[in-house]
Image (tube, rainbow, N blue to C red; front, top):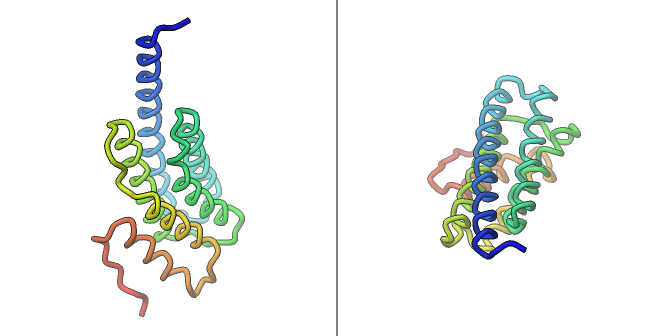
Length: 163
């Protein structure tokens, strides 16, 4: 049987390993998103991005942070629609995905530091629904949903409506 101190040390090591993996996956997503802006139809890049996001979600569950997965799941919903050719990938999706990854990182950091979450449960649920909605709305409505999502994640972003 392990002592509480050994359990705490194991848990701390596990979280440190997780966060190192998380940062690497986050960086990989950033790089893939940049590449996708130049080759939005590249299925290998889309699959790599999906796998990175899916790995982050699985790792969150593994280290006991399942409650932080809904945001990543909503990103997976969008990426799945792109992979199934139900949604065309464009730069606005890169912005949504990167900001969602950044928000997830902030939530993980807050949890690890035992600080308050940067989003309330209500705001997180609303954001997840909005991101998932991107994959469901008609093309004519998509730009507005994306603008709403981006402004919800970062109110300092000013996006002019299409003319």
